[in-house]
Image 1 (cartoon, rainbow, N blue to C red):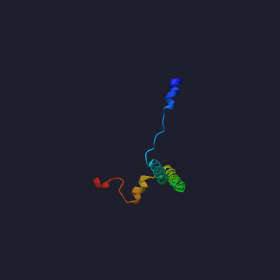
Image 2 (image 1 turned 90 degrees about the vertical axis):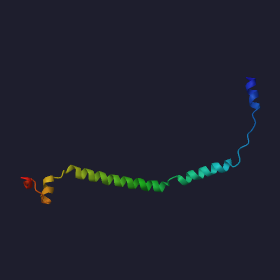
Image 3 (image 1 turned 180 degrees about the vertical axis):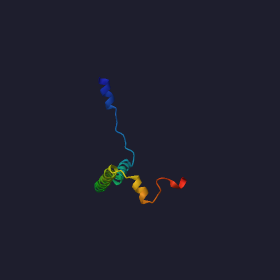
Amino acid sequence: MNSDLDLLSQISSVEAPPFLLDKISQKIEGRKKRMVSPKLAYTLTVAFTVVLAINIVFIFRYSTSKPNHSDWIGSMSLLEDHSLYK
């Protein structure tokens, strides 16, 4: 066990590479610039929620009332019995 402790006394300090602090600072600044501001995130969340709610309302409102195709055909003055081909 003493030999393990003797090995620890042989450890020496290391010289940090030049400009290491500058590189770390630049990476931190770059992350700050890439972050989305909380105000923008809140605005986009509210806008997405409103659009989603409007879509859900339209889906439920118009999917329950099935359109009658014969009314469409009559309003467009199309022939239903295909008398043209008889």
